[in-house]
Image 1 (cartoon, rainbow, N blue to C red):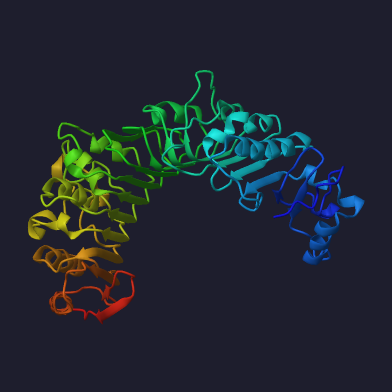
Image 2 (image 1 turned 90 degrees about the vertical axis):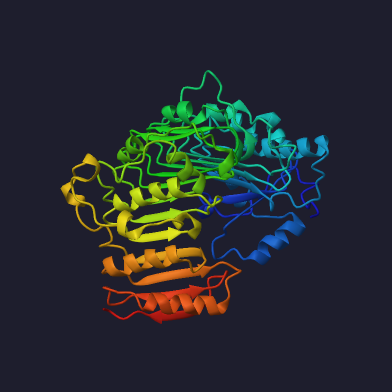
Length: 472
């Protein structure tokens, strides 16, 4: 895009006084005498007026400096529309300097700063842009760098840790190293990391310095082999996805944690058989847990130690349980973990099994009979009896129409009075005739629910076949 501000000697501001507290995206920052800014304009400022102003470089004087007081600055792909060679260090530095000049001339506080430009890597932060924000009252910082195999290990500037008033920090495609002088983010409530290289002890050390953290999301991170969450006491959401094997999983001092999703994307044969996790102490520390999503690798890790029939205290708040794809044909140990979770969740509302191979060898009569309060030596009278009373939805992925699947559905239909939907997504190799035959077998099962329905969907979740089941 052509720069129409080339000959201007003053900063021009394309928005009215009433809009000065609105968020803006700043575009084409040039030298200290060049600037084009844009924002949401009030109704009486038409887009055509801004277009004409761009062409003529004439704007009302009352607009000239208002952009300097905007509290939310966004530098994204629309900010810089000219062709940039991101392999050229000089061009990247020029782009970063334009952003830096915008911060230097900005007046007043900046509460939110977003940097998200395609092609810009963490190496471009060598001018320490964040250092200009630490004295501006920054509370929400998003540095979303572009990912490539060469920049994945670029270390982000330590100036990030100077912004101690942050309540939201989002980082993408960089290497994060915590400096020894870091004293913590005492106001941080949201931490989101994506494609970030972290030190191995990150979760054990960093989180201790964030006492108000409520939302932790780490996707496709590299580095940590241990997911040990000790506090923060206000943590409510923990979403973790890694490209390596986890050696241990544990939670403690997390009384409010309600959503846990852990995906360790490694084949199960790479997990050490000697790794032991105290599954009892881990889940007993989660009294508020409502939704649990675990990959098969996590089940394998949890199964490395002793697995009880159920936990000492029931997971009364757990409503959604989702178990990931299976990568092994021998899943008896992982099946024990799944059954323990089901038995310990009297108010389970939705059950999703992504791969039915985990059900191989299931003995319904032995494994899923209602437990008494004396089972396994763990008295909990509130959990006595059937644990399917609240179950409403069952989702089965990669269904094979096996005997074990039929046994599980037969048990659930006979013991879940509120069950309304069984959704099956068959594996791609299963023929249509096999699907119909399996559905007819399910329809012959005893059913205590008045509204139960079995549904077959394709890979796109489009309904192929549905049948309502009759009450016995």
